[in-house]
Amino acid sequence: MTQEKRRVLPTREQLRVWRDYIETAEVLRVLLAGRLQSEASLSSGDYQVLLALSEAEHRRLRSSTLASQIGWERSRLSHHLGRMEQRGLVRRAVCADDVHGIDVIMTESGAETFRAATVPHLRAVRELFVDALTDSHLSQVEEVTNALRRHLALEPGN
Amino acid sequence: MTQEKRRVLPTREQLRVWRDYIETAEVLRVLLAGRLQSEASLSSGDYQVLLALSEAEHRRLRSSTLASQIGWERSRLSHHLGRMEQRGLVRRAVCADDVHGIDVIMTESGAETFRAATVPHLRAVRELFVDALTDSHLSQVEEVTNALRRHLALEPGN
Image (cartoon, rainbow over all chains, first blue to last red; front, side):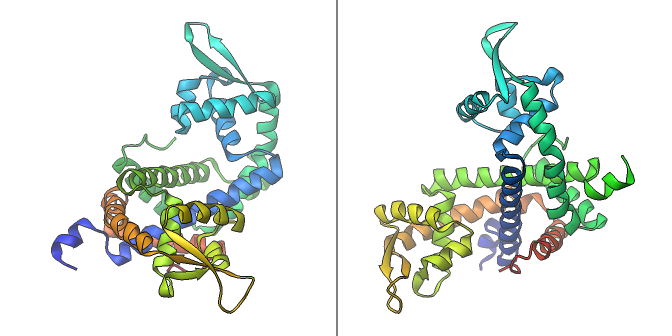
């Protein structure tokens, strides 16, 4: 491999590390989603929405804020919220201060479903991720993730 | 938090590391998929299929082997291959040695599309992932990923 190419493309070794990294994260995502569905009848999308609302003041967020917080296109979020509204997990209301804005509010039933899902979900995170790693591994994950987030100009961890 | 709960559930700190880890990997996956689509008109599913075939002997794999190699359900793979076949990227044929088996073969056009996609894709991996990390970071990613893969009983890295 020429010097020029080496500067532009990853080495075989770097590529192997990349492929294992992204594949392993994907396996974890799929396993966690399966547990959430079987243990709490929630999709991982439902859980992301409910988690964001559970952390918001009065369990209420502007839909545009919610979309950017969970990283979804607004049209995808709107379709998803329609289905969650039919199941009684959230409701939508026009903002008091802006006739064009829509607020998303977690219902009491949504809050109850989220609470019931939380312990099984956290247990799955513990079993599949935390139990695999020593404290030193966890510090390494944190350091590397922070480097990636700085590089991608993402918000610092919450 | 009681001693009992601490054993079962992750700590707030462990949970923060987990959320940053899985969210960052997801952001990388979405950014890479966007680059692949805009630079090579391939979905990340197309790329996974073509990558596996490009590494197979005679660019040919049993569809069941391909499904397990990329971690997809067989029905999902079958639908996806139908669309790739229409675009001339792959073709399917009955196995010579087993009337019930189907082989998937990368066409010359598929191989050409894959070759054209490879350099832009590797450049994106370099820019978004490798450039963010020092050599020491890369070793940390490798160590942590290996610990996760052992825990999840995944095959060792390829």
